[in-house]
Image (cartoon, rainbow, N blue to C red):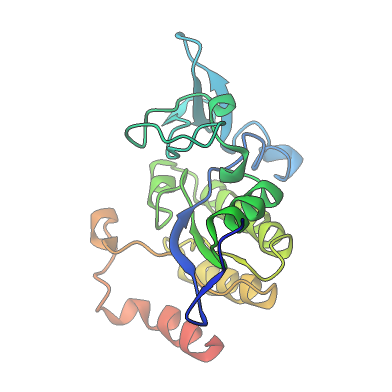
Amino acid sequence: MTPPLTVHGVPVIDIDSHYTEPPDLWTSRAPASYKERVPRVILDEEGRNRWVVDGDVDFGPMGFTVVKKDGEKAYGMMSLTDFDEMSDAASYPEPRLELLDRLGISQQIIYPNVAGFGSHRFMSLEDSELRNICSRVYNDAIIELQEAGNGRLFPQALTPFWDMDECVREIRRVTDAGITGITMTDTPEAFELPHLHDPHWDPLWSTCQELG
């Protein structure tokens, strides 16, 4: 029997789920001139899947999900290094919704994996426009994910925090598309940017406040 999606009338909401990005998330959506530069999956010398960006910037093995194809859990978030080992529910909306039904979960808030929680892994890329495109394409994908989620999946957008004008534009764009929240680095000073209490970030805060 499917568990109830509420407990004493209160919806059961998973507030910290993650999105294991499909191998073609970026390559299937990026502008043609960037398809070889955005995140893509290769096989390393040991035959394992790895993410690479901009030709040879290593973003590590697939990892970041601990649920196997059969629904059993692996030990440690880097245990699964091949996409074929992982549950389809980690990456695609229909099996995710089926899993939520089985677990009795009403809704999920979903965070990114490859880019890091607050886009910070993209800071290893020297080309700021490539960073912007990587963020934008990810956000395009989660807009699709949310639309397929029937009001139950709420992925959070990446913010290009390295470029305030682009950051504000992207927040407005994803909000217009129905996205309900953003992710943001908590240590901008690690990237030679001002601390979060600095007025530099006021346009970000005011935009979020305006959009609710």
